[in-house]
Image (cartoon, rainbow, N blue to C red):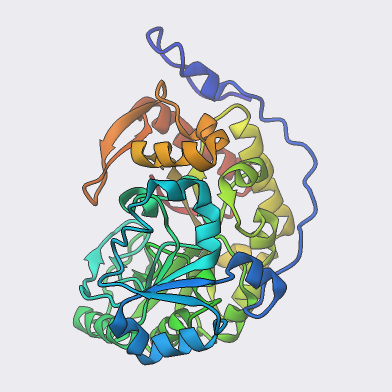
Length: 394
């Protein structure tokens, strides 16, 4: 099978990225086992023992509800602001406790700046998120790049203000008159840019409140990406107004990079349940990490999608392809807790510096490598899952 043109003579390190075998081994069986808020699996994901909280967040109805669900033995430390907590974000000694902090620490804050930003890629708009940070520990996550040495969940308790802001913004837009890559009919609002709404729902009703709000917005649709199967979300009755984007990648990549997430096979297996519960279900092929065997393993994943997904999921599915973006600061943090991940994430010979939309200075695959990789992955989709419409590739 052809893998496209090779690099020029001045690019000796690039050719190996496009000459690996596409031979696909037999697919493994999906692994069942969703998590529930009160289940042992949920407590393994998030067993809160310490809370840092702004006083206003503690005093709010949502803050009190969250605290009522935690153990009475939880230690509470009041802080002036949720964004920079010196003993948490500014303490380089926390690197070795990266995962434990995500498991045992929760931050409660008030989101003071409510702004909806245009996007035009995955969604039309980025809504003000109801959280920041995550209990999962994906080695490539962009959120901790600005936080320092710890990145547990921060939950914002002024959910009423967040919902009201989004409702006003949706009303201001009026109906969507021209289809685009985000959606042909509805304005799409990403509600989970800096967190994972499925994990947030283990300790907070913020996700439920946002899903309920969009249920009554005929011109808009919520959207969030997730790597965690939380069956509690099946009871939220979204009525087609919330899009769940299950992020998927080859199993070997996920075992190395998607720390503490639901296995990829579980995410794929959950798609039909979420569709039947009233969600629109899409997929994120993300991030695409280039390493020996990447074409073979992505082909295997696409064949698995084609084999196990029922027709009703395929008929409405679409996908985003997102190539890896990395960051030198995160690279240094990862070396302190998960250096093996950096063997595939940090590839200076294949990467170049880029300025992201948010102003951050990151690294991505060089333009030639990225262009060839995107073209190759799109060929694999066409060959193995031709029903999967690619909405967006970056």
